[in-house]
Image (cartoon, rainbow, N blue to C red; front, side, top):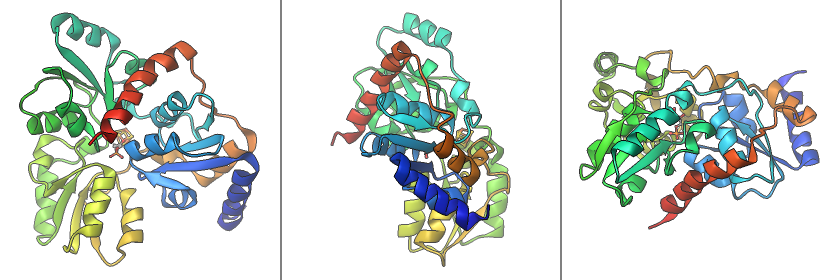
Length: 306
Ligand code: 13P
Ligand code: SF4
């Protein structure tokens, strides 16, 4: 089937099956183009609780689909490729959480949303890169055990010096490929460009950034900035939305490998196929879903507060 027919088929199936398509900014351009809502992980978890359709096709890695299902247990959540899994989501353990809870009386276990439901169920509150600072700042506990991402954790710790952070050793394999040295080289090649980085980057990259933020923050920064050239230190899927918003601005990658292989497993063919066959539904043990609901719901509540 050619691409135009495939897109037409997806649009028809969406109507027939009462489905909505959500896509993360790291997806292939053509998948973002068929989505009803595109966003960062906070926006997508929030919008998943508001859409009226009974079926959510979640074009993202599996923890995103899981979160949508936990927040909307009555809905059908379809993952176009269930093998699309964020490696960082597994880089924390219930044993370590237990150990920290025994060690510290006054501790909040803060869980980056890039984690499995299995991990989330043992934590106090979820965060994303868009809301972590606000949420951590407003927690009553002095000690913060931040899992799984050490880089986002260290970045937030710098902004919230009144808290005592305990870090975990998780990381994003895509973002850690971008090094400070490579950013310096890109700066030399593009001396007029501003450096925009995702907080999953390592501290030597963040030190050189003119702006640090979530995927939506980076897109907004480029869109609103009077500057014309930018070095982008995150997954290159964000360029799709940047090109829609401001086609004349120039963006440069630090390295061509800024591509998340898991996000990129999702194709238009797979979107059409799950809509057609209703396979790859997110299924979860009810007790697990109920336990993992609390930290996600707490994130939504705290992020909405003024
Ligand atoms: P955002 O929440 O900024 O969209 O990031 C998600 C992610 O997976 C980054 O690697
Ligand atoms: Fe996970 Fe990194 Fe891919 Fe984001 S970019 S989904 S953190 S592997």
